[in-house]
Each structure stands twice: as C-alpha cells, then as structure tokens.
Length: 329
Image (tube, rainbow, N blue to C red; front, side):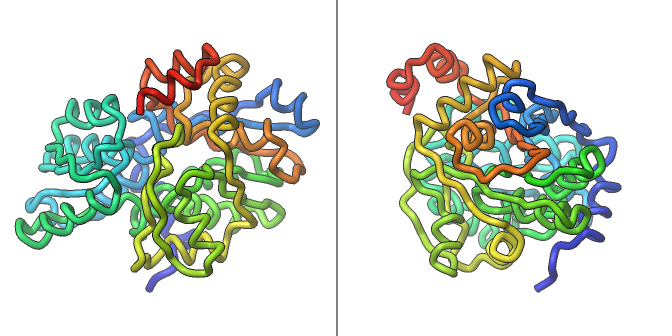
C-alpha cells in the first residue's frame, strides 16, 4: 500500500490547477477576539461545487486512463462528493452514477442530478449505497471513484493543506472536519510535511462519527449512521479501509466530538460574524472553538469544508429554531 505523501499531493496540485479554485484564507476578527489568538478561516466552502470534494474528485478523474473513463464512473456519497464527481465527469464528458442513501438531504440530491449524473437512492446508510456501487462495478464494469479511501482522492484533498501552508506558514493548529478521513489524512500529510510546528486535529459530531470511533478502537469499526446537522460527516469508513484510517491514525494529533447544539452554534456564528453560509460539517471547526474543546495555540486555521446546507434548515438554525431544523430530518 502506497503512502500519500507530499510528492503525490504536489502532483495533484499541478494536475487540478485551472479546474478548481484556490480558496481564500481570511482572518476571523470575532473568533480571534474570543480565543485570544489569531484565527483564520480557509473558505473551502467557496469552492466551485460548494465543498472541498471537487479537489479529490477532479484529481481522480484526471488520473484515470481513457479506457476506465469510457466505461463510466460510479461512487457512493453523502452528497458533496457525488456533486463533485458529477461536475468532474461532466467536464470530462463521461457518464457518472452516484449512489446515495435516503438520509442524504434533498437539496444535495438535486444538485447532483442538475449536473447530469444518474442518481440511485439505496437504503438508509452509506454502506447500503456502497453495496449498489459494488454491484454496478461487478455487473456493469463502471470505474469506482471512492469518496475518500483512494490515493488520488486523498492527494487531491491534500492540496487544501498545501495552500494553508503557503498562505499561513506560521500556523500552529489546523482544525479539519473528520469523516471518512480523505480530507483529514490529505491535509495532515501536507501540513506535517510543510509545517513541523503545526498540530492537526480532526473534528466530528457525537452522533455516528465512524473515524473517531475507529481511531479509539485501533481498527476500522462500524457505527450506526444517525441523523445529524453534520450530515456530510456521516457514514462508515469501510472495515477493509486501506488508506485513510492509517493516515488519520499516524498524522492526526487528536479528535474532538461535538453535540448537535454545538454544531448549530457554529453555523449561527459563521453566518452572523463571518458572513459565511455553512453546512454543519463545514462549521464544526468554528463550533469546536466556541465550545472551548480545543487546546489553543495560535495562529489557528479553521477549514470550512462546505456550504451545501438546505436553505430551510439554515434559516431555522440561524433563527435559533433547532427543533424545526431537526424536523427536516
């Protein structure tokens, strides 16, 4: 098994240049005041498809041979990776099938459909969606682009870390949303390779955080997939995980888990103080700072991973009505 290191991430950065945005890294005056150290926001929420996922999907598609592209592409997704793959496939002129569970919010499903991908809604978990991917690979010969556990996907996500290291070489702490581990493993590889003083902490939710549970157990484990404001962080990491578990185990300096109220507070703060519309997964770094769950040393970089929240839910959360927002489940 190959290690996704700086050389592979640097090659991904060259490959995807011109296909994805270099997103801004801006100071957050409100969080800097609250935390007593400089806090900067890496606004990956302003990526073309509304999340960091475009980096990994684009790198993976551009790395494929012509024969694999001709067969068509397939993936399982909680929404953002499917949208990213649909975008990358459309740009390359190839077929894409995106398999999602019934827990994926409708706005994310429609965004994938709008980009021309074929949609399969299967079961109520990421594992159910993955079963359909496996069937399509086996029976129809489609080429799989996994949402996280793939070297080209990890390397693409790692380009976020390269940009952080270039724009804030004095960073001492980077907070990264933690789900399947593609983003966390890629960013940690880039940050650790470039900034020897920096710590990288993965942030997730209390309800169904598979990677955090796996790291605690010392091996990949299954967890029940539950509704959460951080829906993009749901799903398992795969019991046969080949890359992201080891990357997160070896490179992360810790993990933080958040309650639903804390995630909601992060969404509200981002909107009111930083002018950012964030989905729950994108707001977990802010939420961890507000909840005082992170040992601080600055400068701190908070990775805002995505903006693809259902508008009705966002209005309810911003208005302080978490009950109505949860009712969208």
